Image (cartoon, rainbow, N blue to C red; front, side, top):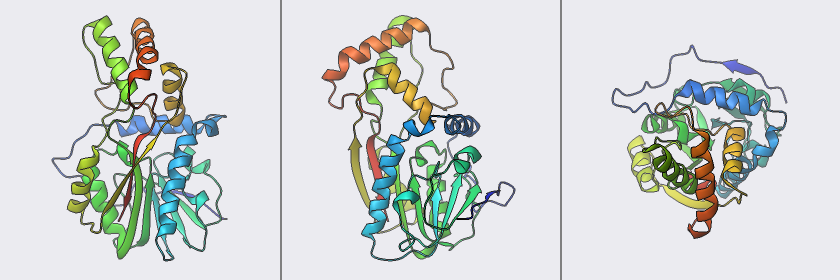
Length: 286
């Protein structure tokens, strides 16, 4: 398998961000987080959630009774989908991510692949190029999600298929509540420490506005049990999934962290989705 990493940052984007698009996330910070996480010597131990999501996305590909000559994985990370696919189903694959370290540390697969260093918000491909577009655990960091979905629709051929997974809804609900309650108690107010996620009910409308039809939205809940809050935060950092919102608070006081950890440990048994990382896994099959 001969794979090269190419940077296409200088190419003209397929569609530019709309004037009214939100700018919630610091994409430069997210790239640094992913670079750091993928360069860890033990980075594989933090891939369990991405591996699970990638496997489920691949299962949806096999549900489609056809072969895809050319596919694209948007925000592939270390390529957690392709390892579950065969070259009989996907004949050739393009992998894109903002982190060159992730691309260089990608998983091996039997599909002939090409790596492209590119921003998921600006896909550097021509219209009507791909038979299949995939995305797993990446779209929740996109500022202009409607614009990104339109670009995916444009690079697909008229009979193309888009299958994606993203976290949404009440993901990390327990961690969010624990931090807010502790900060409110200790500091008299709170700042957002968990990035906002897209509501499940909004996805259908966004996909329809992008031009997709024959929509199917599945919701899977993935539960991961942890000893406490600090272990959750450590794993998020190792995944490159730390908060990168522009309005994030850069420092948490030690007293606040200890108070939040105590709240988390004491209340998780009372929460319906106790110690959940991943929350609703939204699978879009179009």
